[in-house]
Length: 474
Image 1 (cartoon, rainbow, N blue to C red):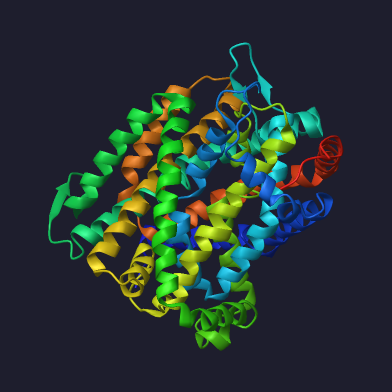
Image 2: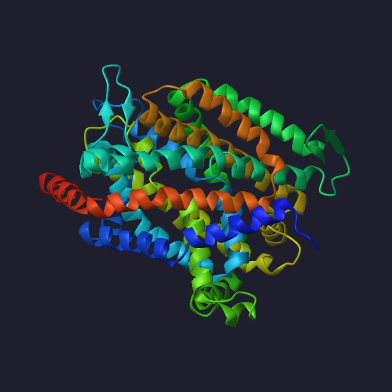
């Protein structure tokens, strides 16, 4: 049987994803996190309490465009998204329960990575006379490593623009929203509408595309301050709601937790013993766990420091600590609870479901409330998480474009971004996640090279800061 052009393209995309997210990149990210953990003396453990305290305590006289908490919420708006609800489920289904173990391991070391990114972003940022801040990997590569590496900075910025437009920022998020809404309101797709040149699609999917695109357009016109103001309200509220329901699910199934933890740990090192041969090897579990973890918390990706650079702060170390809490909240807390819920309820073993349907199955079968209510709560959480991620990634990708062009073409790009949001629901789930993984991986390479090169700067800044502030305690 002759293959269609889309089947051929899909196979090529999968091969490219396997190549980029192979052992070299996973080792690069994990070793980078381990190195930075050593250079900062396990700061993600010893200074976590202080970081959480400073998360809510803004500096009043620092330079920058938005508060330190606003910068964190902007970063969290981009990280707490479909990766926490859909991505974790996808990782566990593809790599077995062991993928969750590797996701947590990567996140632990990723906290040191995120700290270093935030520190370097503030140290090397540029603030103009209008108090407009621009910083991130492109500037700490150019100014920290030297102008001879400006090509690497530009490469990161190019990948950042593409990631926002074609992957993590638009298509995956709106696809997650439309899938969740479709599953809840019209699971059997009984109401269809024919769109010229595109084909027949469920009415719910089309309505979601139109409504979300309109709201995205309304917020993006206001720039970073509006994105930050929306994020500071939506992100904490929805994160707490999701946390409470996931916690209730775990408490209601508390007797099964020990067995689930054993399954997760055993699956990390011997997946076949847990999956019955469905998942091939430890490398597969590690690959899926690390890739989805990076997709969710973005440690090592280089995106979050773009938001950190806009924070009103004078202390790079302080903002680094605040940035670090993003990975802790996103993966160590929220993703772990999602993954545990999926394993506890056996949702990962149910045939015929994928993506958000897996997490939805876990909530519907694990919570002591009517399945319709739990499905509705999950849908609302996913919609708002994904919506704020769309906003956050527009900011990231626009700053990358601003570095490349000096500010030219931003309005055109913004409209292209909005158009990509509208097109997202009409693209297949598997292709969406694969493209997003590819873009993430391409961004990670230049950023991780910079973090290896500048680890000495991170260590010195950290030591000098805490030597001066010896009175600081958690």
